[in-house]
Amino acid sequence: MSKTVQASRAEAASPRVLVVAPGLTSRGGIASVVRLHQKLPVWQEMSCDLLSTFTDGSAPRKLFAALFAYLRAPLKIARADLVHVHLADR
Image (cartoon, rainbow, N blue to C red; front, side):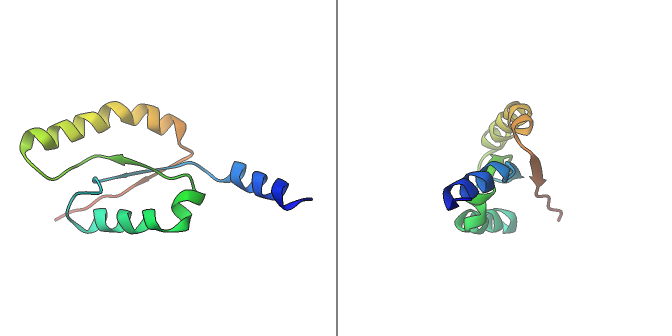
């Protein structure tokens, strides 16, 4: 089997991963980890997509980010093979 066919099969077999986490411009540990993950080759290999649920800023800006994520979530979840949710607690 040619390398091209093997590569095509590997790409087709990789799951689509939805990562639910704070936005990349947010402060904090989870956003830092997600920014790091995006720089790694596995982010592309696993067809990762970010659903940003939080942003720093004023209360209206935070509310808009949450509502936007809430509205986009059903479609993004339906397209994903795996949903990876980052949570934090104080």
